[in-house]
Image 1: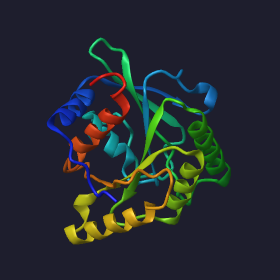
Image 2: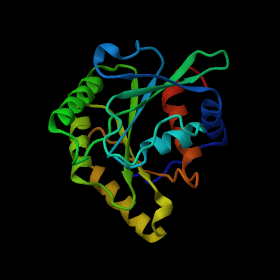
Image 3: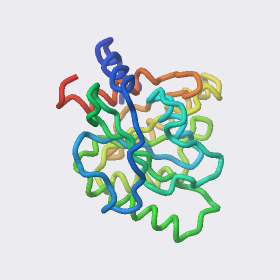
Image 4: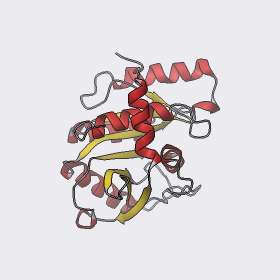
Length: 223
């Protein structure tokens, strides 16, 4: 199984340009009928509450404050849509922030509602290219992550694990977490066989993540 991808200079430049242009908040969707019409490719970020989804989206797009970060578990309760636009203002890519999961303080009915919305979204979004499943590198995969991976395998949506906060642990420990994660996804049918390593604070892995998104989401549009 691969542990990394070597991106070309052209691929990294395509990723840089994609996120160097205007990125705007579009809307928060609380049901399928409030989703934007399907059009450009979409990529999604999912993860446990406080895993750093909002921070990573802000670092990825070079827009501080675009996605709202919070220390309050479960703040993201909708599907939040952001548009990466072309030079003339047309959406070229949708970035979706999925509701956080695994928080203990949220009422069960809210957790059930968010889970239902996420499952319906995954099943019905033909333009969805990939889910990026964020995992705190200090803790590795938890049971709630495995539960979401079960859902993604069931819905046949390709997902890629992204380790966050990699600057917070030692290099040897990070390598062990990455190896354990690779072993955990080895037999999962919908898992992309590469684990990305990132640090939003230090910028580690951001050029590669941008290149991956540009390659998989925009290849049919020309880079």
